[in-house]
Image 1 (cartoon, rainbow, N blue to C red):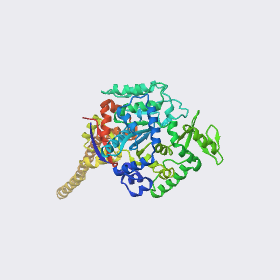
Image 2 (tube, helix red, strand yellow):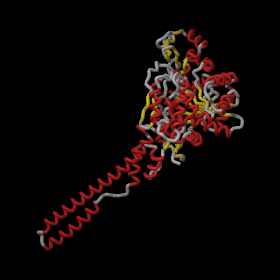
Image 3 (cartoon, rainbow, N blue to C red):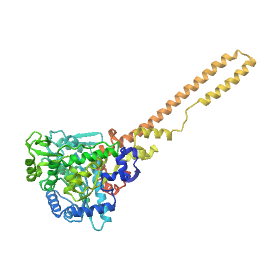
Image 4 (spheres, helix red, strand yellow):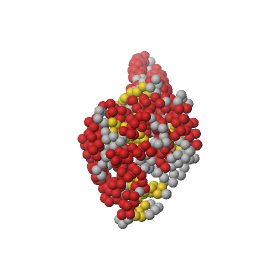
Length: 535
């Protein structure tokens, strides 16, 4: 495998706020705590050490050990979990939904990046230890978003009625066809049996999707010390009681995020709201699924269930915090309440909705983490690599828009000028001379000369059309090749990392594919990593 790093085109970002964030414009500091640097990580670690109690750490470690009690983990992951009880250990975190078989490539990239960042920080730091964490969104109930995966031209979908359950609680049943379709779609390379073993071990009938996801990702990344956390646990939610009650008492999330969104719109005209807050930004978990809580000025009504007065709801939060589930805009606060985290790695839209939350964190007296943009990666197989070399065009031109790529090829590669105007001009001059001669000798030749001139000009016109048609055909062949390369990197007009699953790349390279990602993925935010699988 080989890698190269290219500059990220600002047109690919397409967002003023993220562009300013990448360039570390001071205008963005209003919505974050600080930009990423070793010094800012150190400062956050010092502050988090003071504000994250021993009891919080003990609760977290106990919960993680319980979660992993029936899962084999590496010595490194076990040590990382235990080290979280120490006041000098902190997390580098990313999060994602429970997509089938990890879903699109970007999930693998995010995980590799938090591992890589943790490794680098541990080399640079003498006083602190950093561990990589993946937060799985086990409480999300949008099953449709996570129920399919794309391999090559094959879309595999798990079609069941989720009953609006938190996706992590859905059991692996009626899953045999999904397993078969997924495994049948993996190209038969050297490590196909290895990935199939991981699949069969991870997705067992009767297990929950949360457990299956943890087992699957753990099998891929445990040797790198990754900790995966399913925070849908009573002991962890007991650490979040004050924040849940603040939501009922003061409508803290709506008040603070609405104000922050207004400021973002003023400072960045193109800003689009990522998530609008509700009156109450957590759900109640019921026998009928995850249900919305609505405030009507007198009571708090749970969809399809009871209504509560304020005191009743506060008492229920105190006694049974496990019955409540933060929504997407409150989830970051919950994450930072239960983890000694100092840095969150996310995509553009993730960071934009985190930037709606700074004053909300301040109001709840929870430290806002350093935000870091996840890196973009494109993977090229050997066939595509050869096509790119043959095209004579640098890989960077295949990352942008298809029309820009084609225009670049036309402007820079086609040097044949198929315009015969000069030939027509010379021909006219020659017949003008012949007409002068004819006038001096025999005027009757003028008609024949004119007819001959017309005939020869038509011949030039026909020749020009035929050659242009042939040249256009040559161009179409080359352009079709460019389209083929482009479609490999942007299947269905979607960036490869947002569409394709990782399985075929793992089948080709095995665990070394994961190791290579971890080694290479830490690059600056204004760059893109290109991985060529060809040795």
